Image (cartoon, rainbow, N blue to C red; front, side, top):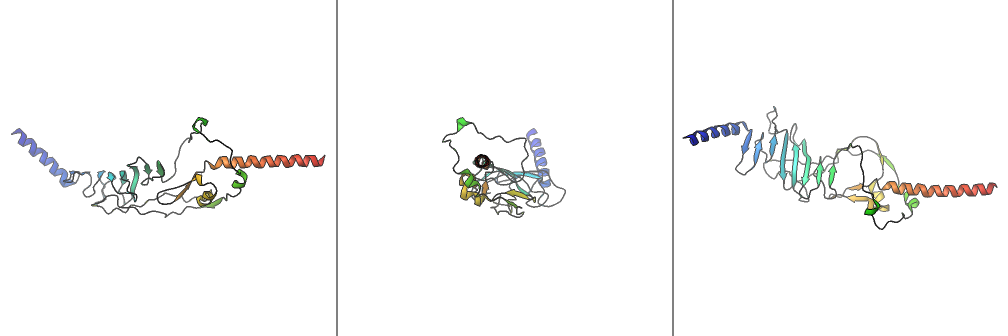
Amino acid sequence: MKKIIIAIIFAAIFKTSFSQGQFKIRNDSYIQIGYTTYKALTFGQSTNLTTNNGNFAVEYCSGCTSSGNGGFNIWKPWPTAYSGNFLFYIRDNGNIGVGNIGDNSAKMWVSGNILANAFNLYSDQRFKENIRPLDNPLESFMKIKPFQYNFIQNKINKENDSLSVNINKDNTINRNFDQKLHFGFLAQDIQKIYPNLVTEDEKGYLALNYVELIPVMIDAIQKQNEKILQLEAIIQTLKK
């Protein structure tokens, strides 16, 4: 008798949960919290009576990327549709995307600015081999052309649907470029001079390692300073 009563109580609880859409275990084994249609675990419920009523959601996406890299995705379907399809994404290979789906060319890809107190790169001599001076640093340095530019604001890439069923999710990658004026170089130009400083992501876009341009510039300045000192010595000799 007690078992029957307990069963009736649990049935009443789960019936209420089902009817209110607060908690649901579906026949296909998906668990939903605060959502009624998506194959995802969602948290929170908006007062706006629309299907996009989950403030945050987590999912395992088996086909989010064009290269077939599935992963764990934290996204934000509210307040508007597709408002945050990829807030934090961990690929099956361990690569991470913040504000995007990550990329095979980098352990972490961040769409937006990063604030930090310091960035320290390994540079211990004991980690290095084949150490030798730069080849023609001044000549190569003089070929580099600096520019000022603005980033295109609407440069986004279409991706496959995040969820294979029950949702038509228009996954776009917003690279979160700011509208400020920037000074820098064109990766295509540097690639012709220092191809080792340019990397290509899985969609063919180029990125530039600005940090390793610093030794090139310093070496070029030093070589130029040597020539200036030589010319000053010649001038002093002529004066005498």
